[in-house]
Image 1 (tube, rainbow, N blue to C red):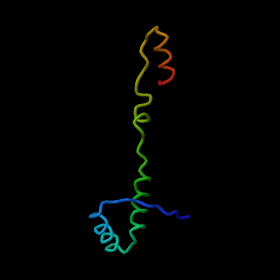
Image 2 (cartoon, rainbow, N blue to C red; image 1 turned 180 degrees about the vertical axis):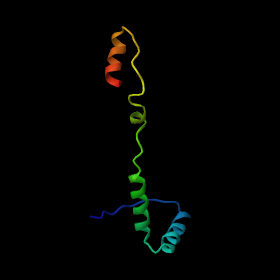
Image 3 (cartoon, rainbow, N blue to C red; image 1 turned 60 degrees about the vertical axis):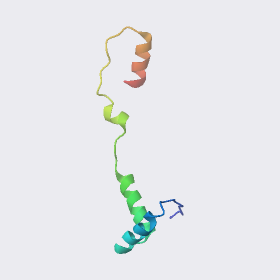
Length: 73
């Protein structure tokens, strides 16, 4: 099901975007939807997931350190 979306773009960009869509034989809405699908499909891992498990806990006898290690390691 399609939903209506209102966006705001630079005044000078709109005519260029419309020409770009027209030159490809699609509507501006279709062009924007395809761009959003492409962006959403990029399964870029988060910063935390990229680094998770790459560090080892240091040997420390400190309650605060142990609490943080349990939470983040």
